[in-house]
Image 1 (tube, rainbow, N blue to C red):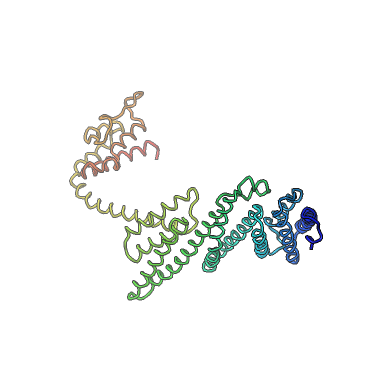
Image 2 (image 1 turned 60 degrees about the vertical axis):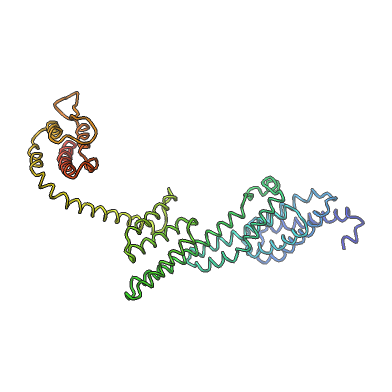
Length: 421
């Protein structure tokens, strides 16, 4: 009707420009007043009208509308990117996106395209946060369903980002439109990656839960059924590891801890279990300086320490069986060592060096204090102890190892007296 009443496109453009100014002012009034749910139909209608007028203006570049373009872009930017507490924002953003898509099909305005891109990002990011919230409440299936339902939309969104690059819309254009804080390169791909990670976490956690149920059944069921439940648990844990590997450290660590427990308690393979526990701990180190939140980390540390303690105890038991006969064989030498306890620290040190010369690298004589040659300092005495320390003499033969242990004990007892212990 306006086109029939105006004599030229210039006249029509002038009328539409004035109309656009009025519509933008209406939008600004809505924004400053704080729109409510009751305002949403009228608000969306005004947005649609603004976009219709702007589409005509943009498709007629022979008319100059610089005076209204800035006001329009500011209004649309604010309504697209601000969060209004009085509105149902999810419903509002979806409705706004539909209108922006319609406008985008009618004109190739990079600004409209960019606002549409950012609105889509907000919608998808909001759904991701909602899914994370559901996951935190233990509703893994609902969270996973919500994430999976957005896969096609995410793929389309990633393609839109490629178009953004093709159109030459970059950081400078965003800054010119007052949207500089929203420009992030590869924004869609990063969001898609977050969706993939959270989907993997949901699926792996669900498999862990089922695996734990089967594991508990295998521990409490009849012996005839034990292996069947054990194999089910193993399959669940392995499937969880496939889903989560390289995706999330916390969840991957929890899966490795479960697999380790499975090998330790059901398959009775402590070496394999130890390797899996170590793998989980090494994975946790990538989170440093932050420690993992899950109980799995403490379980792994305790299991590794228990395994090492068991190995050490076994080694000590074996060594004690070897050591006892050697002690009997060296009884005369050990008696000679004990008989020398009345000597001073310096004399005792010289006596040991003379009777049982150290086999570790170092001076062949006891270090003497130059300021008082009749005494030996604590520092020098400590050097004597180090020459006979067990860890430095383990590869010198079993008899020498036993003798160095006895010497080291005698020297350490004297050193503790020197320190006043």
